[in-house]
Length: 140
Image (cartoon, rainbow, N blue to C red):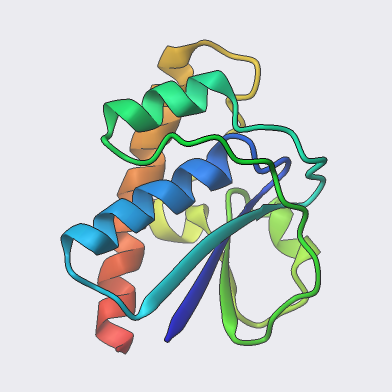
């Protein structure tokens, strides 16, 4: 079993979108040995943002409500994927990569911006998710 945790600031936009887009993708590829979740460095229990929900619906991924979850103890058996290079410093693990290593750029925070910004953010996330899945399939 491979465990993956997407990590961002508040776990209301980027990391939850990454979690749900990856869950959809692995389900479509019939990959069952990857466990996926998401956390926020400073999560406070807020709900997923309305624009994140709307964009997830457009991608036919789960848009169900969920409260944000704060990053807790680091699991040495989990691969952490951060939205930015800066966020990597919050994960004391040798199993941490950023989206920049996957797609060549950080995933900027769309919080408070319009749905079009969220849509572009989700497209970048999906590109990274697809690359990540390819890499994980090679490691299986």
